[in-house]
Image (cartoon, rainbow, N blue to C red; front, top):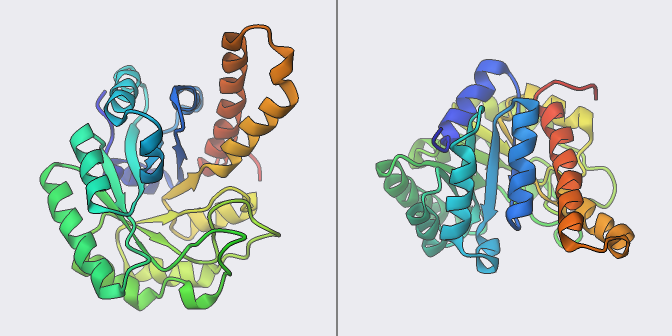
Length: 278
């Protein structure tokens, strides 16, 4: 099987009325954990590599390793660039063979976001690669305050999608990256309004820390893709802090660490896929 495009993932989401998780990779153990979770749940998944992570591993080698796993997959699996903020980063992902890319121009002036996103779409689509854009400002928990001023505006979303041709749109509705301080309050009325005026896929970033019932409600309101990383990172660090000294062999440690990360991924996948209670 070849890596799935974001459009194929969105089509699956719509046909089955479920959400699909995108989980970020920090090393091959994380990649294996995410891939195995997809095989065990029999649900599609997206292997994410944020542009800021690309400095920590060889992109071509990691991409080829992911493709080797995907070749034997029984479910659709994509290789996705998460938060590509620079033209060069997106081009690196495209040349490495990613099946979808995100260009995050949310910090730019609106017209500049439109112009740069549209250019990325033109290039990526010519290569058969799907594109996710972002409108509104998600920000980072503990660093940026959540205010409605940064939320995605439905009428602007409609204009943005029409002018850029993006296949998916990441929205800001009260969600943030990182570890939330308190319980996030998502603006579902805004999400429903956005869904009414755009026909592309919708993406919820900053998934770690959102309540289960709110994930389900967001998916019912039209979200197709949900991003998770902090929950995996937190579980891995906790396992390391509590158990690393118990292991005599590093290989045994990495095996169990991979299992811990896989279980976090599976739990989210089953929730997004409406296969567990919430």
